[in-house]
Figure 1 (cartoon, helix red, strand yellow):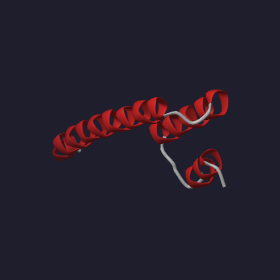
Figure 2 (cartoon, one colour):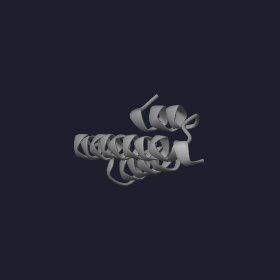
Figure 3 (cartoon, helix red, strand yellow):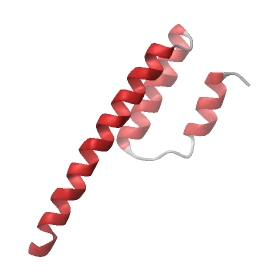
Figure 4 (tube, one colour):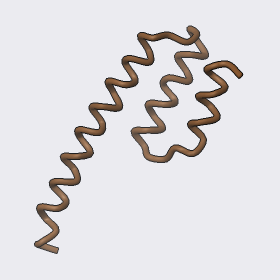
Length: 68
């Protein structure tokens, strides 16, 4: 099994808009240009940024919970 097949298989169970978008980006780039450390590093950066943003969303929602 090559890296693209592994990626496709492992991504099947992933949900969430950002998560799917990042994985689809990597799959597409790997299909077009082949596996690349640069693409993987960019995807890791994007995923880390999304985690940071989702943490902010959680904080905001917890802050307004008392008003609901």
